[in-house]
Length: 138
Image (tube, rainbow, N blue to C red; front, top):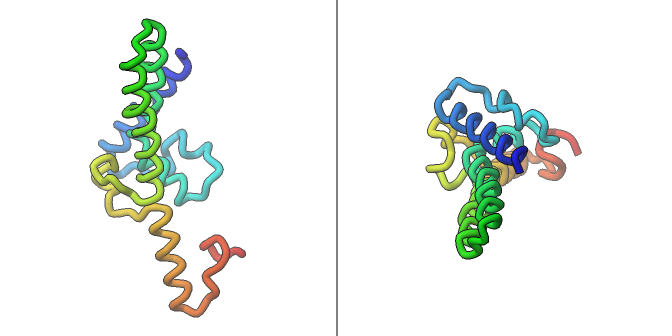
């Protein structure tokens, strides 16, 4: 419980730092470096740090509410905090939407799904097969 709270607080601090520093490289986010994705996936994760941190902190709130037997409030926090934060993370990583949750200097980037479609369309225009991973490897 305490560990989840500390991780959530640390991620929230990183999220605030990514919002305030437009010169910060997306791959400099400590949590993004540990992920087994490519550079585009790591950049997508660093774009979605704010809703991810809110989802992590909502776990602490959920456990606290369960301790005092507030079941209706716990259900609301699960629905809006945990599920809303998790779905927002996926939407930001895949489509870079909703834009108000993305740092202002990173709103022009494409999401993972949009980038995949753009690479696929570009490969079809150049006559390549369009299959494979999108990075030149099959």
